[in-house]
Length: 236
Ligand code: IMP
Image 1 (cartoon, rainbow, N blue to C red):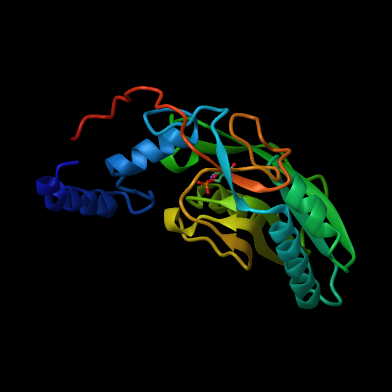
Image 2 (cartoon, rainbow, N blue to C red):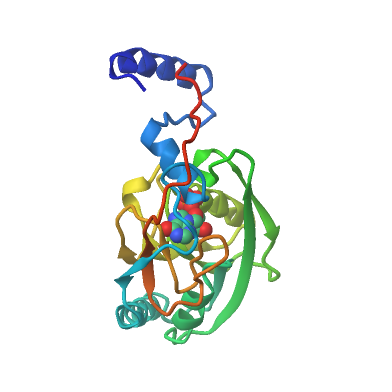
């Protein structure tokens, strides 16, 4: 975390990557750690669950964009049948609206996942696991994976690997929101509703500690009061 140690640290990182090329090693700075903690309700940047919120995307803006995405997908997949796979639970509103703008023969499927492991969640190296898999066979079929939000990209990377193991003919990704500035894993996104800044958003299916999913718009949670100091791992 000290600027003077950065060169040394990068050298160590290079060595680690040489020794373990099969492992994806990321250097997290203090700011990254605090943000990842905050995402799951911990640390000084965490917000209270009932914090004030401001509207980032109105219900009307969302509906308009979802319609455009639906039309684009319909054009791209003309003459094909697709399997629409939604990632529970944040995707419910988006999936329900999007599919009504798809003029294609389609089957609807859901995947449920959970994050566990390291405190700080997916981006901090916590594992992703499938708790409910798709029910239909997808081998040889065109899959459209529908996500609510892509943040670090870790969840999506895991999901793509999981889906490709089922040998579909193709897999494309459609996400409503893209927090591109936070990407740690490069993931292919074919359809993107909105690129949003690095803020924690709720509503239209997205939650904070289980709340806010029922908002018709997408809002930004603003901190009410800090939850106190957080202990960071030693700078080694
Ligand atoms: P990733 O693995 O870092 O890309 O994280 C993706 C998951 O983190 C999403 O599927 C969401 O469940 C959650 N997430 C990331 N950012 C937000 C947010 O701003 N609001 C609500 N959930 C979020």
